[in-house]
Length: 233
Image 1 (cartoon, rainbow, N blue to C red):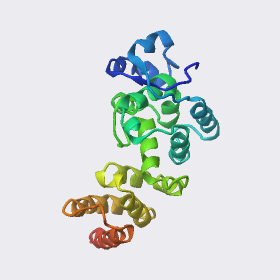
Image 2 (tube, rainbow, N blue to C red):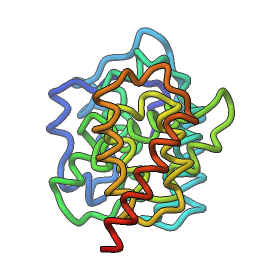
Image 3 (tube, rainbow, N blue to C red):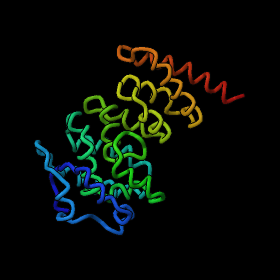
Image 4 (cartoon, one colour):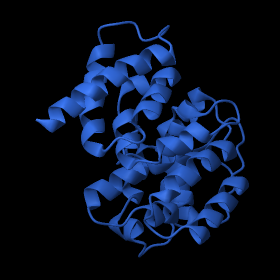
């Protein structure tokens, strides 16, 4: 792959997300196919470091392993020192997934549903079925503390936790995300799925900013106790 600088893939690039690309029957689109759908960003972002990191991960981690998320998120974030404003541009994540590194998406996820696989190349957001590069970068952004990505890695220790926390708006407030990971990382899926909707509902009635991680943890601990009581009935 000769593309070494970050571009933005525009809306017309959606036609490039084909079953052949998603299945690996087509490795990558040639430049003459994708170039008419792309614009170069104003600020230059070389992609060599990202490419080296992804190649290393794909060589070390078996295909379709959830281990890839915890390993890849910090590396993607470090290799792409974007501002949050830049990272809000869905076109750059689509460019990475559709044009530059579709093999990374295929390595992480087995093709089981065309609708879901297509979303992992294209859909914006932090859902588990959204653009894979965007999701991993943003979760790292929301959980890191300067150069410390330990919370990021803990967030991915449980797929249920990673999914249920980061589909909710409170995850954009780091003390809330950290409190959830601290409280729930060792809880079973059934408890996580009971607690987080209640936690989200609780926070919808109060101002989240200004609440400390410790205060939020107290709320979570109470909800965990309630969830276990419900579960035991």
